[in-house]
Image (cartoon, rainbow, N blue to C red):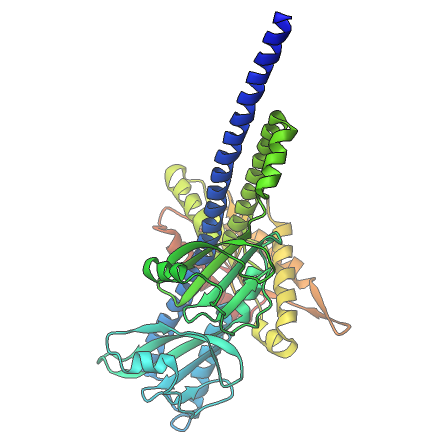
Length: 482
């Protein structure tokens, strides 16, 4: 009897101890999981911030080149020199096509009158934000505007850069316009669960993009009446805030993280439904069902959560280093890998070669048949190149229709043979357009590293020069340095 009582009381004691340990574990797990959710939201926000800064940094570099080139001999009014104006307009279009976020490249003069555009000119744009910010401010060199409706009725933001001549005189402003659809098209590639959402706002609280949640039209203002004023105050003070709100007005509470993008007039907002824990009643029932079941369940939950987090991180890494259209390496990924190969060469002299290539007359195809056909040509070209090279070689899209191939352990003669083989494959490619097969050719420039090569940049310039020579020779051929 005493043994039974001892067993009963010891069992009760252990059970009560485990019960309270389970409650303590539930409480600490709730705190830990809440922290993990916040960290995940911050990670998502950091990825979007990095992507936005990189996109507009690339655009700023292109604008710098455009402003410098136009300052040397232009910009030229159409009534002053028609041919020169047309050449400048063609130059703007070429730069516009090189950037995925550019909808239109245009120029206004020093009085903010539109001089260069695809369809319009001689329109006074002095009331636009980019004109007010740059014309009347001598210290400001560039600006990214808040969203507005342009002359074509599109919701856009504009990235503007002053054109300054050698004497320091303002000659105008060169601008790149970005359609708000660009933000949504890029973010839509992220496979987010239905419980999560990402939105990009302007600093005047207009919607630029929202996935997968939200039904507000792009460019419309956000209703902040349901947001705690103290949360807004913290955001304006610290440029970031964490809060809870029924932001989607669906009866569900979301954890929200908002951050101001450094150096840009944008805000990234990341949300997660507070479905990772149920009500207090659910927690109590879980504890009653069994302490061990709760612990095992939480362990499985955490393992699954970590697995999803790792998969999401891998997806973000893929988007950061892969070309969005073709899936091959982008410029950033290529430069990172190629620099490693060049350093290896400097240490053990393992030879490698570069093939710079682009599709012949691609712009004419693009203009005649449309961007969808152009995208098909680029994708087919990329797939053909990837299929023909070794697994450890590198294919990358540098932009537009320009590609580069890095061949490991290939000298000049071997690289030329690979390039000629690639050309034969490309000649057999075709894209179906309205029942008609559209064929293509390409030009290629080959460069092989040598003891005289001082940097990867120098080798890239050699390959680019040989590509230019191939085009001068009539295209559809390979050129290499003798």
